[in-house]
Amino acid sequence: MPHTHRVVTIRTSNLDGDLCFLVPPVNQGQIVEVSYAGLYDGRVLCRTVDRSDRSVSYAVARLADDEVEDDSPCGLNHEPRIDGDWTPAALIDDGPTDDE
Image (cartoon, rainbow, N blue to C red; front, side, top):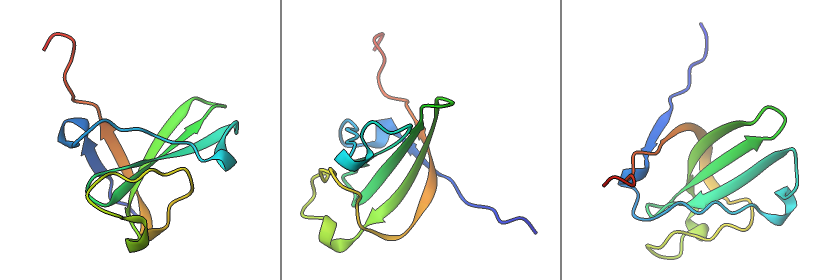
């Protein structure tokens, strides 16, 4: 039986602020660039951009307790420590448009 993974859907309209992805210095300038954005609910979003085929993928995980300081999003200029594993995510940009 094939192994299936669930995919977490994250809607930008449900976020408390704008996403700000930071690329840790060790990942800068790579063909496959990995960056992170802290969410307000203690999770972190990982974005992987493959410049060879222009693909983009997302994954989400819960931050380890020592990464979370308060109710603000964390600044991630390093690979975050997480609890558990990364879960594939679908980022849906359903925020306001210029017409609204």
